[in-house]
Length: 281
Image (tube, rainbow, N blue to C red; front, side, top):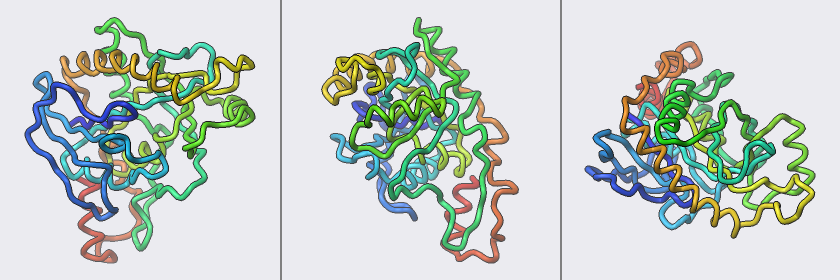
Protein backbone atom coordinates (compact mmCIF):
# COMPACT_ATOMS: atom_id res chain seq x y z
CA UNK A 1 0.00 0.00 0.00
CA UNK A 2 1.19 3.52 -0.81
CA UNK A 3 1.59 6.09 1.97
CA UNK A 4 1.70 9.81 1.17
CA UNK A 5 3.75 12.06 3.46
CA UNK A 6 2.48 15.61 3.17
CA UNK A 7 5.11 18.29 3.65
CA UNK A 8 4.83 22.07 3.97
CA UNK A 9 1.40 23.23 2.81
CA UNK A 10 0.08 19.70 2.31
CA UNK A 11 -1.73 18.96 5.55
CA UNK A 12 -4.66 17.10 4.04
CA UNK A 13 -5.46 15.30 0.80
CA UNK A 14 -8.48 16.79 -0.95
CA UNK A 15 -10.83 14.15 -2.31
CA UNK A 16 -9.55 11.39 -0.05
CA UNK A 17 -12.50 9.22 1.02
CA UNK A 18 -11.42 8.51 4.58
CA UNK A 19 -12.29 5.07 5.91
CA UNK A 20 -10.27 5.09 9.12
CA UNK A 21 -8.23 7.38 11.33
CA UNK A 22 -5.42 5.64 13.18
CA UNK A 23 -3.96 7.45 16.16
CA UNK A 24 -2.02 6.43 19.23
CA UNK A 25 1.60 6.15 20.20
CA UNK A 26 4.22 3.80 18.81
CA UNK A 27 7.16 2.11 20.56
CA UNK A 28 9.13 5.15 19.36
CA UNK A 29 6.80 7.87 20.59
CA UNK A 30 4.00 9.94 19.12
CA UNK A 31 3.63 10.52 15.36
CA UNK A 32 2.97 13.96 13.88
CA UNK A 33 -0.74 13.19 13.68
CA UNK A 34 -3.30 10.59 12.73
CA UNK A 35 -2.65 8.18 9.89
CA UNK A 36 -5.58 8.45 7.49
CA UNK A 37 -6.59 5.39 5.51
CA UNK A 38 -8.84 5.98 2.51
CA UNK A 39 -9.30 5.78 -1.22
CA UNK A 40 -8.53 8.28 -3.94
CA UNK A 41 -9.12 7.56 -7.63
CA UNK A 42 -9.96 4.01 -6.62
CA UNK A 43 -6.57 3.42 -4.97
CA UNK A 44 -6.38 2.58 -1.28
CA UNK A 45 -3.69 4.66 0.39
CA UNK A 46 -2.49 6.18 3.64
CA UNK A 47 -1.81 9.84 4.42
CA UNK A 48 0.16 11.56 7.18
CA UNK A 49 1.03 15.26 7.49
CA UNK A 50 4.75 15.38 8.32
CA UNK A 51 4.55 18.65 10.27
CA UNK A 52 1.18 17.93 11.88
CA UNK A 53 -2.09 19.76 11.41
CA UNK A 54 -1.50 23.49 11.05
CA UNK A 55 2.27 23.01 10.68
CA UNK A 56 3.04 22.68 14.39
CA UNK A 57 6.38 20.91 14.11
CA UNK A 58 9.71 22.25 12.87
CA UNK A 59 11.87 19.80 10.90
CA UNK A 60 14.05 18.90 13.90
CA UNK A 61 10.94 18.39 16.06
CA UNK A 62 9.32 15.78 13.81
CA UNK A 63 9.39 12.28 15.30
CA UNK A 64 10.47 10.54 12.11
CA UNK A 65 10.72 7.12 13.73
CA UNK A 66 7.16 7.31 15.05
CA UNK A 67 5.86 8.51 11.67
CA UNK A 68 7.53 5.75 9.67
CA UNK A 69 6.60 3.08 12.19
CA UNK A 70 2.95 4.23 12.31
CA UNK A 71 2.71 4.02 8.51
CA UNK A 72 4.34 0.58 8.44
CA UNK A 73 1.96 -0.60 11.18
CA UNK A 74 -0.96 0.67 9.10
CA UNK A 75 0.13 -1.49 6.17
CA UNK A 76 2.35 0.75 4.03
CA UNK A 77 4.89 -0.88 1.73
CA UNK A 78 5.75 2.33 -0.15
CA UNK A 79 6.21 5.95 0.97
CA UNK A 80 6.00 8.97 -1.34
CA UNK A 81 6.86 12.26 0.28
CA UNK A 82 6.23 15.82 -0.88
CA UNK A 83 8.72 18.43 0.33
CA UNK A 84 9.78 22.01 -0.23
CA UNK A 85 13.38 22.11 -1.46
CA UNK A 86 15.91 24.73 -2.44
CA UNK A 87 17.91 24.38 -5.65
CA UNK A 88 21.69 24.29 -5.71
CA UNK A 89 21.82 23.91 -9.52
CA UNK A 90 20.90 26.57 -12.08
CA UNK A 91 19.10 24.06 -14.30
CA UNK A 92 16.71 23.13 -11.47
CA UNK A 93 14.60 26.27 -11.36
CA UNK A 94 12.10 27.54 -8.79
CA UNK A 95 8.70 26.10 -9.61
CA UNK A 96 10.15 22.84 -10.94
CA UNK A 97 9.50 19.35 -9.58
CA UNK A 98 12.59 17.36 -8.62
CA UNK A 99 13.15 13.82 -7.35
CA UNK A 100 16.37 13.08 -5.48
CA UNK A 101 17.87 9.61 -5.76
CA UNK A 102 20.85 10.14 -3.47
CA UNK A 103 21.15 11.79 -0.05
CA UNK A 104 23.77 13.42 2.13
CA UNK A 105 22.72 13.66 5.77
CA UNK A 106 24.21 16.99 6.84
CA UNK A 107 22.14 17.25 10.04
CA UNK A 108 24.04 17.79 13.25
CA UNK A 109 21.20 17.89 15.76
CA UNK A 110 19.61 15.31 18.02
CA UNK A 111 17.47 13.52 15.44
CA UNK A 112 16.99 9.82 16.10
CA UNK A 113 18.42 8.28 12.94
CA UNK A 114 17.66 4.58 13.35
CA UNK A 115 15.17 2.16 14.85
CA UNK A 116 18.04 0.04 16.10
CA UNK A 117 20.21 0.20 19.19
CA UNK A 118 19.43 -0.41 22.85
CA UNK A 119 20.04 -4.13 22.51
CA UNK A 120 18.98 -4.69 18.88
CA UNK A 121 21.81 -4.39 16.36
CA UNK A 122 21.41 -3.99 12.60
CA UNK A 123 23.35 -2.39 9.76
CA UNK A 124 21.08 -1.77 6.76
CA UNK A 125 22.52 -0.92 3.34
CA UNK A 126 21.44 2.46 1.96
CA UNK A 127 23.80 2.60 -1.03
CA UNK A 128 20.71 3.13 -3.21
CA UNK A 129 18.36 4.76 -0.70
CA UNK A 130 15.47 5.48 -3.06
CA UNK A 131 13.16 3.06 -4.87
CA UNK A 132 13.92 3.27 -8.58
CA UNK A 133 10.61 1.58 -9.35
CA UNK A 134 8.67 4.25 -7.48
CA UNK A 135 10.65 7.08 -9.10
CA UNK A 136 10.06 5.55 -12.54
CA UNK A 137 6.32 5.38 -11.90
CA UNK A 138 6.17 8.99 -10.76
CA UNK A 139 8.14 10.21 -13.78
CA UNK A 140 5.85 8.28 -16.17
CA UNK A 141 2.80 9.71 -14.38
CA UNK A 142 4.25 13.21 -14.73
CA UNK A 143 4.61 12.71 -18.47
CA UNK A 144 0.95 11.65 -18.69
CA UNK A 145 0.02 14.83 -16.82
CA UNK A 146 2.12 17.04 -19.09
CA UNK A 147 4.66 17.76 -16.36
CA UNK A 148 8.43 17.43 -16.30
CA UNK A 149 10.39 16.12 -13.33
CA UNK A 150 14.13 16.33 -12.69
CA UNK A 151 15.53 13.04 -11.41
CA UNK A 152 18.88 11.54 -10.45
CA UNK A 153 19.62 14.41 -8.07
CA UNK A 154 21.41 14.51 -4.71
CA UNK A 155 19.60 16.04 -1.72
CA UNK A 156 21.48 17.52 1.24
CA UNK A 157 19.47 17.45 4.46
CA UNK A 158 20.27 20.21 6.94
CA UNK A 159 18.95 20.78 10.44
CA UNK A 160 17.16 24.11 10.10
CA UNK A 161 15.03 25.79 11.17
CA UNK A 162 17.21 28.72 10.15
CA UNK A 163 17.90 29.25 6.47
CA UNK A 164 21.51 28.63 5.47
CA UNK A 165 24.44 30.94 4.95
CA UNK A 166 25.89 31.61 1.52
CA UNK A 167 29.08 29.79 2.53
CA UNK A 168 27.05 26.72 3.50
CA UNK A 169 25.18 26.87 0.22
CA UNK A 170 28.45 26.95 -1.75
CA UNK A 171 29.84 24.07 0.34
CA UNK A 172 26.85 21.86 -0.44
CA UNK A 173 27.28 22.66 -4.15
CA UNK A 174 30.96 21.66 -3.94
CA UNK A 175 29.87 18.38 -2.36
CA UNK A 176 27.81 17.62 -5.48
CA UNK A 177 24.39 18.35 -4.07
CA UNK A 178 21.57 19.62 -6.30
CA UNK A 179 18.87 20.15 -3.67
CA UNK A 180 18.75 21.21 -0.05
CA UNK A 181 15.99 20.55 2.44
CA UNK A 182 15.34 19.91 6.12
CA UNK A 183 13.14 16.82 6.34
CA UNK A 184 14.14 13.86 4.19
CA UNK A 185 16.77 12.55 6.60
CA UNK A 186 16.40 10.38 8.54
CA UNK A 187 13.00 9.68 6.92
CA UNK A 188 14.48 8.04 3.82
CA UNK A 189 16.79 5.80 5.88
CA UNK A 190 14.11 4.79 8.37
CA UNK A 191 11.88 3.75 5.47
CA UNK A 192 14.63 1.38 4.31
CA UNK A 193 15.00 -0.04 7.82
CA UNK A 194 11.24 -0.66 7.73
CA UNK A 195 11.61 -2.39 4.34
CA UNK A 196 9.48 0.21 2.54
CA UNK A 197 10.11 1.68 -0.91
CA UNK A 198 10.71 5.44 -0.60
CA UNK A 199 10.80 8.44 -2.93
CA UNK A 200 10.28 12.18 -2.62
CA UNK A 201 8.79 14.76 -4.96
CA UNK A 202 10.62 17.99 -4.22
CA UNK A 203 8.81 21.25 -4.95
CA UNK A 204 11.58 23.71 -5.79
CA UNK A 205 10.90 27.06 -4.13
CA UNK A 206 14.16 29.01 -4.58
CA UNK A 207 17.86 28.97 -5.42
CA UNK A 208 18.82 28.85 -1.73
CA UNK A 209 21.41 31.67 -1.38
CA UNK A 210 24.41 30.68 -3.50
CA UNK A 211 23.72 33.18 -6.30
CA UNK A 212 25.25 36.65 -6.03
CA UNK A 213 21.90 38.28 -6.80
CA UNK A 214 20.31 38.89 -3.36
CA UNK A 215 16.83 39.00 -4.90
CA UNK A 216 17.24 35.26 -5.59
CA UNK A 217 18.05 34.41 -1.98
CA UNK A 218 15.56 32.27 -0.10
CA UNK A 219 12.97 33.89 2.17
CA UNK A 220 10.07 32.32 4.02
CA UNK A 221 7.49 34.52 2.28
CA UNK A 222 8.83 33.61 -1.17
CA UNK A 223 8.96 29.92 -0.23
CA UNK A 224 5.31 29.82 0.74
CA UNK A 225 4.17 31.88 -2.25
CA UNK A 226 5.84 29.68 -4.85
CA UNK A 227 5.20 26.47 -2.94
CA UNK A 228 1.49 27.21 -2.90
CA UNK A 229 1.54 27.56 -6.68
CA UNK A 230 3.55 24.35 -7.05
CA UNK A 231 1.10 22.35 -4.95
CA UNK A 232 -1.28 22.38 -7.92
CA UNK A 233 1.42 20.65 -9.99
CA UNK A 234 2.00 18.15 -7.22
CA UNK A 235 -1.69 17.33 -7.05
CA UNK A 236 -1.86 16.82 -10.85
CA UNK A 237 1.11 14.51 -10.54
CA UNK A 238 -0.44 12.52 -7.70
CA UNK A 239 -3.76 12.21 -9.55
CA UNK A 240 -1.93 10.87 -12.61
CA UNK A 241 0.05 8.42 -10.49
CA UNK A 242 -3.08 7.06 -8.82
CA UNK A 243 -4.90 6.73 -12.15
CA UNK A 244 -2.57 3.92 -13.20
CA UNK A 245 -1.16 0.76 -11.68
CA UNK A 246 1.19 1.40 -8.78
CA UNK A 247 4.63 -0.22 -8.88
CA UNK A 248 5.68 -3.29 -6.95
CA UNK A 249 8.44 -2.47 -4.43
CA UNK A 250 11.80 -4.03 -5.23
CA UNK A 251 12.49 -7.36 -3.52
CA UNK A 252 15.81 -6.01 -2.27
CA UNK A 253 13.97 -3.28 -0.38
CA UNK A 254 11.23 -5.55 0.98
CA UNK A 255 13.95 -7.87 2.36
CA UNK A 256 16.42 -5.19 3.49
CA UNK A 257 16.67 -6.63 7.01
CA UNK A 258 17.67 -10.07 5.77
CA UNK A 259 21.29 -10.44 6.75
CA UNK A 260 21.35 -6.92 8.22
CA UNK A 261 19.82 -7.78 11.59
CA UNK A 262 22.54 -9.20 13.82
CA UNK A 263 20.72 -9.78 17.11
CA UNK A 264 18.89 -13.14 17.25
CA UNK A 265 15.26 -13.14 18.31
CA UNK A 266 16.00 -15.08 21.48
CA UNK A 267 18.33 -12.30 22.65
CA UNK A 268 15.57 -9.66 22.38
CA UNK A 269 12.91 -8.72 24.88
CA UNK A 270 9.29 -9.43 24.04
CA UNK A 271 8.74 -5.74 23.26
CA UNK A 272 11.75 -5.67 20.95
CA UNK A 273 10.62 -8.79 19.13
CA UNK A 274 7.22 -7.14 18.59
CA UNK A 275 8.51 -3.99 16.91
CA UNK A 276 11.18 -5.83 14.96
CA UNK A 277 8.56 -8.21 13.59
CA UNK A 278 6.52 -5.18 12.50
CA UNK A 279 9.49 -3.77 10.58
CA UNK A 280 9.98 -7.16 8.95
CA UNK A 281 6.34 -7.42 7.83
